[in-house]
Length: 471
Picture 1 (cartoon, one colour):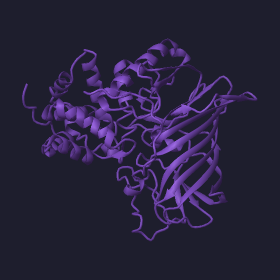
Picture 2 (cartoon, rainbow, N blue to C red):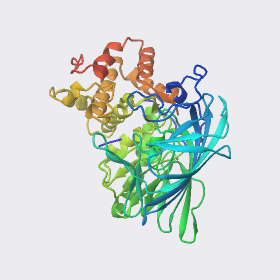
Picture 3 (spheres, rainbow, N blue to C red):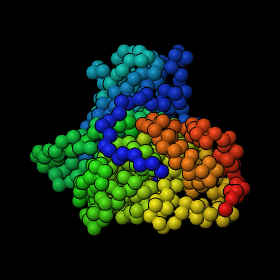
Picture 4 (tube, rainbow, N blue to C red):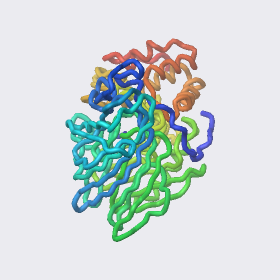
C-alpha cells in the first residue's frame, strides 16, 4: 500500500500450493488438542478475531452477481479446505449479508451468526487431515469496514457505477465468507456478473471471453497462485481497458475509469517497465501477469491487489507504481504471517521507491535516508516498526523507518551481499508466509555477521538509532 544480476521476467505457469501458515499460528495445535471446535480466531494476538482455526483453505470458487443500482450482491462461495484437527464445527469470517444455505461436502449443514463469525456445524464430523468443501449461499447490501485509525473505509465500497474493492487488513469478509487473515493463502476462481456495459475486474487472468445474456455480462477470472484474502478484489464499473505485454513478454492488463482515460497509456507503459526492472532486482516476477486499475473513487490510497494494484481516485506517479509493484514480491508472493510484521511489506516497498529513484537518476537511497534521519523530532522514532500497532497499522514508521532499516543493513553488509540477500529472500519464501525473525536469520547467514544489534536498534527500540558509520 502507498499514501544486481538480471533474471527472467516470464509469466509464471502457476504454483503447487504449499501449506500455508494457518495451522501453525492457530491457537489449536493439530494433534495436541482434543477440541473438535475450530477456534474463532487464527491466533494473531493483535487481531484476535481475524481468521479462524482448525483448517487450512486451499481454494475459493466465488460466483458473484452485483447490481450497482440496488447495491445488492448475491454470492455462492465454495471453499475447499483441509482440516487441521477433527471438526464438529468451524467458523468463517463474514460481515453483514444474509446467509440462506450452507453445505459441507454436499450435505446440508446448520449455521449460526455471531457478529462477524459464521459458525458452521456439518452433518458429520470432519476428520483431521480430511479435505472438505463448504458452500455458502448469501446475499445483501455489502457494508464496508470503517476504521479511522487505519484506512478509514475499506472492503467492498459501492460507487456510482460499481464497486471499489480493497480489503487490507480484514475487509474480504465484507463480500465473501473466508478465513480472513494473511496467514491462510489459497488460489481463487471468480465468476462475476454485472449489468451489460460494465467491467468486472478480479485477480489473475481471464479464463475466457466475457459472456453477455439478457442484459448482464459475466467475467471469469482465475488466480492460480496462492493469495491472501486481503489482496482479492472484484472491482466493477465503467472502465477503459488495455492489454499488452512488457518488453520481457509479461502480459499486462490495465483499466482506468472514464475520467482517467488520459492515464491509460502511461499506466500500461510504466507498469510494464517497472515490473520488468524489479525482476532484475528482486528475482523473477512471481505471477502470470501484471497490471493496474485507476478507479474514480477518491480513496486517498493505493493498494497492491495481487497482479493488479488499484489507485483510488488519482493517476499515480511512477514512484507510487514502483511501490505497489514491489509489493507483488513483498506482501503478495511473500506474505506476512502476522500483522505486526507489516514492515516486511511496507518498508520493502518504500525502499523500492528509493531504489527506483536511484535507477532513474532522481536521487539516491542514501539521500532519502539522510533526509529522514536529520529530523530528530519525527514521531516515528518513538514507534518501533518491527511491531506494527493494530491501532496505527499504517503509521509512517512502518514505511519510512522500515525502509531505513533496509538501508542501514545495506550499508552494513555492502551491495555485494545486500542484493543477493533480497533475491534469496524472495526465492526461499516464494508464495509463502514470512516473519521478521526469518529475515534476520537469513541476513545473518548470507552476510556472515551478527546483525541482531542493528535490527534491534532500527526495528524494536522506541528511539532514534545512532548515526550510521562512514560517509
